[in-house]
Amino acid sequence: GLRFEVVPSWFKETLEKSSFAVPYEYAIETAKQKALEVANRMHLKHLRTPDIVIGADTIVTVGKQILEKPVDKQDAYKMLSRLSGKEHSVFTGVAIVHCSSKDNRLETEVTDFYEETKVKFAELSEELLWEYIHSGEPMDKAGGYGIQALGGMLVEYVHGDFLNVVGFPLNHFCKKLAELYYPPLKHTIQHVKHDSIPSVETFENLSDGESDSSNPMQHKSANKLERNGVPLSGAVHTPVNSGSIQPVCTVAVENQSGVMEYPAKFPSKIVELMDGFRASKALFVASKLKVFDLLKDKCILKPVDVANKIEASVCGTERLLDACASLGLLEKTHQGYSNTDSANTYLVSDREYSLHGYIIHSNDRLWHLFTHLEVAVKEGTMQTHRAFGKETEDLFQDSSYHSVEAKQRFMTAMHSIAKLTARDVATAFDLSQFRSVCDLGG
Image (cartoon, rainbow, N blue to C red; front, side, top):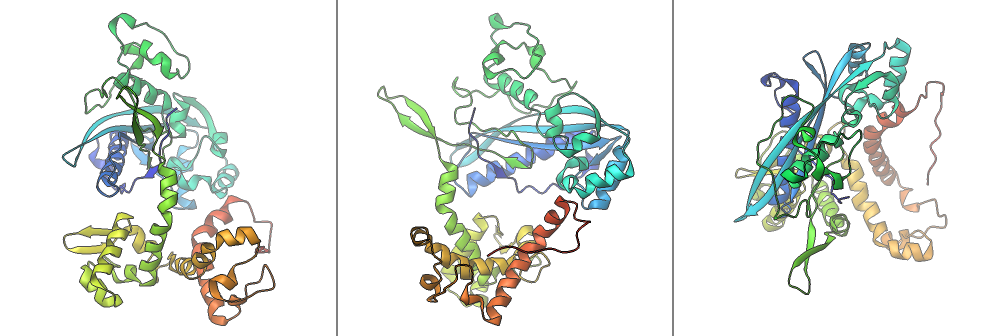
């Protein structure tokens, strides 16, 4: 198969549902906007033009109401109660965006489609319903359930593509790729009925009738895509539906005949690991200087204003702000710089779910310790003495935490990360029978 890269989309799913005549149009448009956002961001900020970007969005509908992810357990209860004993539809909208660059401008062609699967829930007892909700599984699922996991016990029957309910209509997607990249020749058309997902090698034998969607309507806003007769060379696909988009690059090499070949995929993941420390340090420095505090609550400042407030050079401040903008932490306009929604939520120091304490701990403590990781591996000892000039006898006791101030910094860091993770940990298991907790660690 093809290697792909997962790139989460920053598109805010705030489309007005009432403006769409039918629910699947909402899913298609959301998928399209997710994919286009990633394509544009990679082209402008990462200076990479992906060959293909694929976006998907799954929704659950009962009647004409669209059910999205529940915001809390009570919301999950309302959703699942509404689905109990009823048949509902699961729609997945998929957008395939073909990208090219001309004169440093991104050009895109979009093909989209949708898949509908009918699902019926059994009559759910209150006990079963709440047991499922307390498992924590409904909280990140459209409609409040995941059929591929514990949610499968709620389902009485499925009519249509099971994988569509999981989150991605793989069969329909593969047939769509076959239409785009392997259009059947007239003399090779054979009317073959496939009972399961066909392999790529058999797609060229599919007739037009068999490659069509089971849905009566189909959306396509671009012509068939062809790449000089070489389909999917360096292309990308998305076998999951979590708001993630997946582009892939290839490394071109000229062979002895002077023909360009693509023997290797560009090692995007490795390159990200190589440069990851730079992104981390940019985040650490901006947090230490409280840049995000200055730009909170829709405040827009120019580099010179930020530099004056943090008592730093203008050129250095502007470069730091640009780095944070390229990482998606800040918004940059002609007016200046401002926080993104995620920065306002997690990086402003006085917010409820702020990670500021843990970031400062990572910068002041962990960064210095990991600088000596090679020596730590060779010696099998703590590197506190090298990082901070302090010796320790006990492998599991760090003397640098003995002061009240140091302990306070550490507890602030642990509290900030725990506030984000505690809910998931607490709801992952039924802990109602226990009355005490033991914290193990070193």
